[in-house]
Length: 315
Image (cartoon, rainbow, N blue to C red; front, side, top):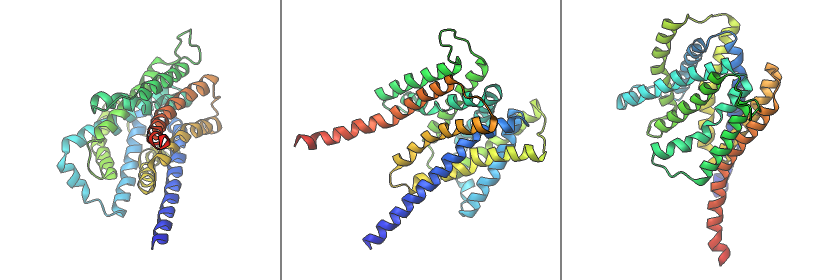
């Protein structure tokens, strides 16, 4: 019985890595997909198509899990909460993010967007009353040095920015994403149901804004395919794969560190498919950003482990 239990845990752990790698791989393709889709659509049109696709996909997943009945239950418990999350994500976050991608090379927008992981603990400290560690501050200084290198194209002394608006929007998207996750720390419901509720509530705002400021998107095959890809693999299915990986993992930390692979793989897809020449400033800036993320994740674990080992070694 004990051996059987261990076998089950090993199989679950292996599946966790499969789901985690699948999620990381799909996320690493979306920066390239954004640029392709934005060659057919305006940022707001792309949000509209992608969110519609994601709503259909998430509804199908919940129907398969027999959880559609949770939608009205969770919404009626906290309607104001889901109104706020729907306004932030998908409405504000993706409009801002896609506008940044429309203005910047994919390599720049991608790198700047990944600083959300460093920004999150800085915002969580005052908003959630969490302790701000020295490693968080050090990580932020390192990561935002990388942001400055990318934003200036490596011309640090010149302070020349190719697209100040695009850079500002990319950094604003990280702020919105962090606020979304901070708000979601108060959510006790099923995470996939919560995401679908946010998208269902955000869709009317997206539609109204589209009708007032833009035109309805084209329904050509190439355009629709590009928009649907974004909806499926940025917003919908990949999120569920990642949740499954975290749920089945024996150690969440092992799965979480896989995220560091995503920007590196993304750069490869950008160079290969979009044929963007990856600049030295991007490589250097991304190295700083990833170093900050690694420091933020691994240093506290290293310190905690040494604290636990200290008394044992003293004996």
